[in-house]
Image (tube, rainbow, N blue to C red; front, top):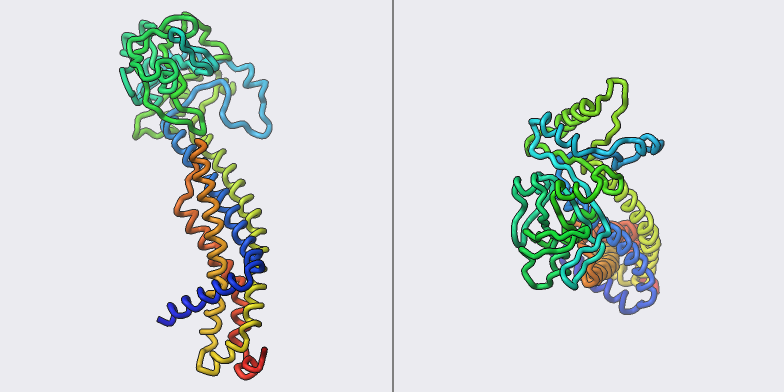
Length: 414
């Protein structure tokens, strides 16, 4: 009951301070609001990016290795000339890996061609990526079908002119009509649509299939040079769900060195990439952004904290005679201390709530504009917690000085 009474009186005094000294209180709360707004905005953006990254990494797979010419992560002394002279993974090497690696779930050879135009009658869609892959592509890449089906093993091996198209491609070419069985023009040739993928939406690593078209690699080999740097050829190896990725990596590395006949003294002339490389790099970047948010927001909160302390000292001076009367009626020192301390906390909470409301409005505006920003409950709790801490620190000295006043001297003051 005492706690509730203190909280009620402190809230009333805080509201009264806002009402009586509007400009002074507003300027002081502004620092707290800006600080909380800055910190929570940065954390909200980073959390949203991390969530997007997690979804992208899940699509890449945590048991998937990519054999490529270039590594995804570069060191400080990047020997680009060595990587430039490396050979690209080839279809022949893919076939050799199929024979040699027995303890993997799937092996796929893939090339990709970007910024292409596909047509259906008078309709066309630009900036489409065309992916040509071997039959196991649907095992290394998540594919959920809206309509139709995936290629059969026979269709993949024979290189039939079939295609699986992304949701945005189907929407742009056919609208609401059924694309299955229709012929579209890809790379200047007619291919038949046998499947349409479900809408995935954009993601951080651009792994969405919405604006992609998949065709069999054995069909694409008749149209383009699959060894060309322009098409980023790669071999994708997926381990079993319970497999140790390091063991799969070691087996794959040994098989590739054997296929390319590298001596024990020679360096690898290929890169083995995996999704965790990107995760580690981006998480370190997010850590720097979080730190920047704390630093920038911290200065605003510091200024706001000094403002709150100033309000509380003025409030103690204005209510000195009231403090004296309370003490003469039996109020203890801790009652006076908590009264002013709670008032400081309430003021900081008001500033923090204002900052959180502004962030929430920004997330709504971003959602309306097509950007996904999510203010998590964890960030809300963080903002309120920081407000309470700042209120406690800023209000302690004024509250302590009020609790130590002599009741007689306090009553005499004006």
